[in-house]
Length: 404
Image (cartoon, rainbow, N blue to C red; front, side, top):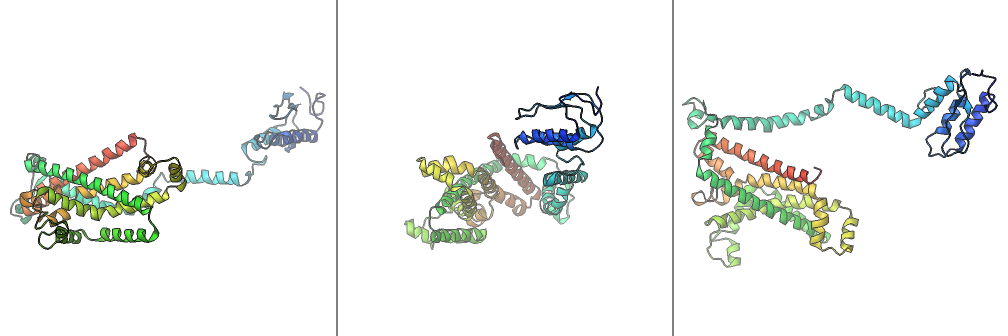
């Protein structure tokens, strides 16, 4: 142990010498090295009395040939070095704007923790109230009525409402017509979805290939079809394909052929109308997604010799997958619930109900037969089918590693 004035021959005599040694060592350190030289400067220049200490070998400075000094470092000097390495000066002042930003971030995180995560829910509260009133409550009423005996007698008050539990569902599942209508609905909805996606995606690609004027005309025509009410569009299509006065039969030379008389021709006619009023949504959405793809990616595929179909299948479609997920789910929901087109174009479901789908079937049970509980049960089955299809589709995409 030595005192503060009688040190070894290799130790500096004063604080100034120590500061000079630290400064020269710090100057030898490259800027990328994390402030070791600055720590030695703070060690030599920090204020406070020089407290005697043992000869402790100092650290060798990375990037320098000068070994660390053997010195008894004062307590104030050691605290100054720690402060510099921690990112502040020896007096504890913030080290510039970076430390101030860190402090504000820490305060913001503590403030968010203080609210207990309630702030996002406060912003979502108005939308949740609207959804609760317009979505949750009607679904609750639909499920409740499907569990009751609820016909015209109960509506008029002639008989009391009784609880049937799952009796309406057992009656529905035992009906052979329900299974026929369900199968027809699934096939018809799948055909509409596939055709709508194919037409919408094809026209979206076409929009990227044509000039400004044809692109504007196509966009306006598509948006006009999309904006047309379903009942108006259905009436116009019935007139176009009318066997007596329709121009389509005259152009095709079909004479007095009735499109709505046969089951499959009626479904085909309705499918065309559904695709006509649905593809604009797919076209506009996919076109916006294509325009967001960097042109360099498509140019690289073209330079590699990829055809248009190969570019779409291997480059464009994978990059558009999140958008395609949205338009597919929307199309499934819309086409599975088709009502207006079937009801108007086939006069309520076709001859002997050959063109019934679940939505029209539920309407007939609830309002034509006054069996409101059975109609509600059909509505609940449709809701469960749509939820199952959507969840399975999303699960398959998540298994493929897609971010949704």
